[in-house]
Image (cartoon, rainbow, N blue to C red; front, top):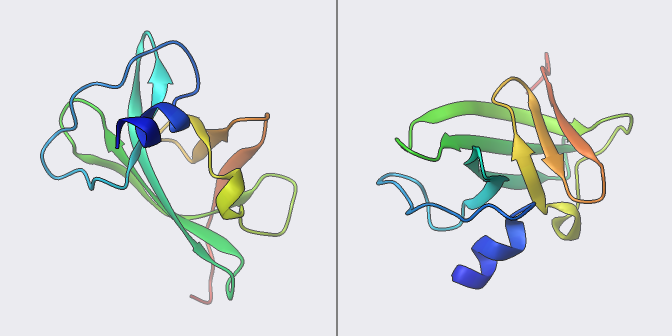
Length: 108
């Protein structure tokens, strides 16, 4: 599990203790100034990643919804879901400079 947490970490910050209620599959992304736990699923049918962002201190859900790669009409693949940061305002940064952005689909 520690390997998974470090793999998802985008810089030199260290993951905090996982708050109660945050799934073990959620990966911490952040730095010295804090971060978030992020968990994204892949829905190829709708071409989205359904993601949940958790506060890294309280475990409270900061954001939940559908995301797509910025500038692309597709979901991120499993190998691309290496989180660097999440702003809780509709964006999740990925290693390699890509960004997932929140989408609002009329037809879910």
